Image (cartoon, rainbow over all chains, first blue to last red; front, side):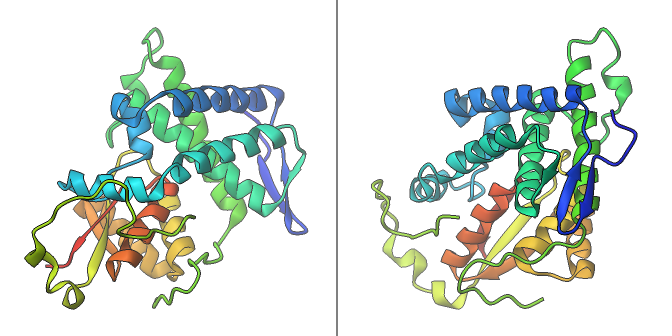
Length: 170
Length: 101
């Protein structure tokens, strides 16, 4: 893990200070996540299902209708984000738009991994000791948590991205 | 984000016709549920980003999610609520919509 800040804003862009090992890890997570998203029906894998929750609690018919209306957009959006991370993974600088895509992908990696190893509110490193089958996965999870936190700090206050034609009251 | 359009689904679901007579009167609410993985700072950031809420309001909602297990984060016509849920899902949050009661 780099000691320096992994993402630093400079003239509207973000300088990326990640080591080779960190970038290789991201490539590997992209590969595994794409494989999961491409092959798994959400209903057959709880970690994939976590990325596509039901829109209506206790109403499977309306939830199905919602999913049918959206079509492949949710899945293809996540696959496109993975593509972007892979394409820019060696970059020394990212645009804000690219860093936002990276953060979304890293959050998806945490959701997939965290669900897989049954993360709870109370989970600590003591639940995943050395020798545990999920030890490595938990170490990666902790790293991704740190990385996402650093992304949020680098990005600062978000600009609102309201849907077209909407009026929101703060 | 693809906009959500109701009623064009190939799967047609039969509903009791009386069920939605009063729909225009009752807004739909969007609920975000607590989950053990999403970071509190990230959830706050998503509320600011997607709804344009000031930090104070976004943090209050995030704390409600964290301590009470859920929070109503937006409301409106069903189509708008579905769109908000889809945007929250795209950002990894666990969100549902339901008619306000």
